[in-house]
Amino acid sequence: MAEACDIARPQMSYYYCNQVEPCAPGDLDKRGKSVPVYVLEDTQQLDRFLVIGTEGGTYYASEGRLNQENANCITRLIESGQGELVVQRIVDICKKGRTAKQNCALFSLALCCRSKDKKTKVAAYKAVCDVCSIPTTLFQFIQYMENLGKSKDKDSKSTGWGRGLRKAVSVWYNQFVSNPHRLAMLITKYRQRVGWTHRDLLRLSHAKPEDDTIGFILRYAVKGLEEAEKYYMEDTIADADPKMLEIKAYLAACDAVKELKHPDNLEDVRRVVSMIEQHDLVREHVAPEMLNSAQVWVSLLDKMPMKALIRNLNKMTVVGVLDNGENVNKVVQKLGNRDALRKSRVHPYSILVAWMTYRSGTGHKGNLKWNAVPEVLAALEKAFYAAFDNVTPTNKRILIAVDVSASMTWMSPKAVISPRVSSAAMMMITLRTETNCDVVGFSSSLMPLDIKKEWTLDQVISYIETIPMGGTDCSLPMVWAQEEKKKYDAFIIYTDSETWFSRDTPANALRHYRDASGIQNARLATVAMTSGGFTLADPADLNMLDMVGFDTEAPTVLQDFIGGNLYE
Image 1: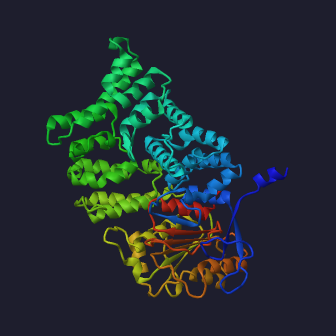
Image 2: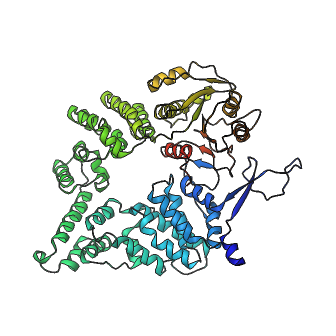
Image 3: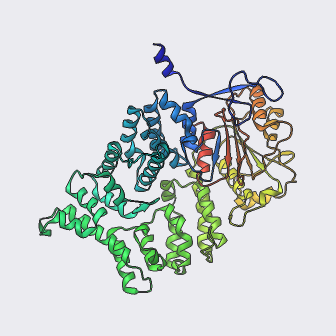
């Protein structure tokens, strides 16, 4: 019984005060005083890693390199006999779409597959189809498997492709036996990623198809269409399965459209347009050179999903698609389709980024330049406000604190949105979607802001610019709320890279507020939009979150955190 209890006991990490480094109970601080210790279970750290990408309480907008040290909680959970629980948690979080950085889930799954615990390995390999929904994620998972295999045994001559991995890859391709057209689309849309191709995976896994149609597609991926036809269709096409003939026609179109690379050749353009319309091909099927043809983009436009439309507006303007009034009207109508906006679940902040980028007339890398079409700009602005309906209210009592110091207007040379515009937009979104929300502006002092829900973004920014500026004290919102005896479930602080505080740390200010208000689970999110790194949140407090940088995934993380849904 003693051994069973030892295995079941949750693993803990100990943290003190507002420091990143863990300590043990009984440690003393630099002044020789007893350190207040907070306990965080490994299962909670696991959730953090899967959802926001780190074991501590910090979300990073930039991608970081993953290695085994990033997820020590997983190793400890596996060693304590809870590896299957880890796998189930990975699957649950992926299925619910709660991963801000999916690479963390893929890395975690690879770590479980590479573990020495048999039950964990079996469960992890079975979960590959659930976690890797498209070839992009499958290729990334394989790359993590490769990296972990090399790091664990550098002297081994093994390829790392044992029976478990071979079977998992084979099962992944065979899962489409009831929908082979889906497989044909996926392997032609995502032909290669991170140095891996379908040919690589199929050769290394020795995948065996469950039926001839899947076999035809897999042989095409390895040896090409001609060899697949020879092997599966024998001498007479007339005897072939109609489903296989349909797949053959689709794959032939995918191959043909990739070979047409001359946008100035009218016949080539006509053929590409014809195949797009006949076979529902997408942008990734088309040769990059042909994406300089306005006619090709027009043919793609009809069935283009909302997110793809928003992402490709710049390119379509550059190649002349929007020189035509009819095409402009089509784009404006699609952007104004509230039902399509709702179904796309696109966050208004993503539209804001697209809107500001389009208005700037230059791409992020500077290799594209365009003259923004006024009607499209207006449609993007309307879509930004319309997408507020896509945000689910948390129904929490929220205080938004916006840094009004001068540095909020500063932008890096490649940025299209200043921290002031980003924070104003996020404040507007919360103000319009929540029923109980207050806004304050702060620098070296703090003042309530009388912002109207019906104001436009430009009106909000103009109002903020009238407020006196000073330094930045990130502890002021909690101090003010305590002094004014305000009741809040959550504090959101928006700043740039200034996370300075004077009298007390924001973490301690929050603790004092909790004690004074009686709201012991009051949350604090500190969003430093241009920061390269900082630590204000207590890493052992699940109700504190630091956000380093701000990307299009960050609003969802923030929303889930405020609503108490980030860690279940």
